[in-house]
Image (cartoon, rainbow, N blue to C red):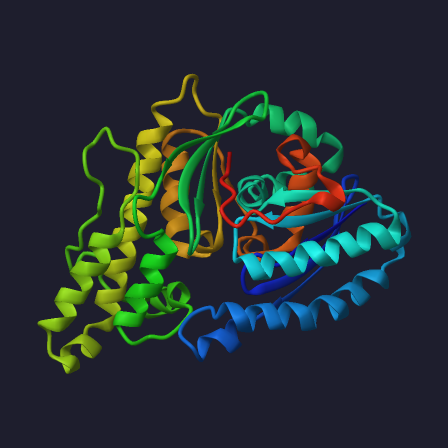
Length: 344
């Protein structure tokens, strides 16, 4: 029974995970409304909220009958905002001492990487090990506000980064695009909402694909292209064409992600048996649809993280500490935050 804490950015989260049953309780305090007034995450405000929210969330976890059977503590140690990470790690250390339970530091990105397998576990915990073996090797795509990368998991469950973004992450590009269009924060969901009914081929935005052999992503040119378009277009026309603008901008992001994923699928040492999608942006309906179509063409299943586990959450941290213990930091009370901790 694992108690997990997450505070890498602007979500305070606690979860309890039972390997034999799955998630038995999870709670998240979102700070979206707070930071929305500022157009983005303000680290000092986020840290203050973590200080306020961990205690009440932990009280809810303590009310579970399973609390007495907690056998370990897992906490996000990085990557993320340093001050936010420090709050979570300090709380986890205090719990480790108070409960007399071992402490593991978890890589937030590895949490996202393994979150695509959580629905497989939830479907049948008893047969999970065999189900995972049948899905490896695996190609995964993590898409969030701070990260966009392709990675593989081999038969020995070793992770390897295949490609990443050279500049903006996909989520960052969506947020900046929404800001240019005057839509607010967080931008990704707002662009998706306004794209409904729009024509995704109305505007020819750059895909940032580069050379065919290059698997890295690039989204800075897309953002710049939108800015130039807005500057030379009358304000009333921008508003009138907002659905087309949002649909075309979103499609450029989705197309780049899917094309690179398709290219990577053909480059595995051995054929991939599954394709994964996780991270905050993975909740985008158009992206899920397009990547699902790619998986069907390749005759492999798409493993997509559940919507509640696409953003920052403690459930995926607990799950990763269980399935990927070798990728965790077992320093215990000597655990230090790692704001720049990479996937591998």
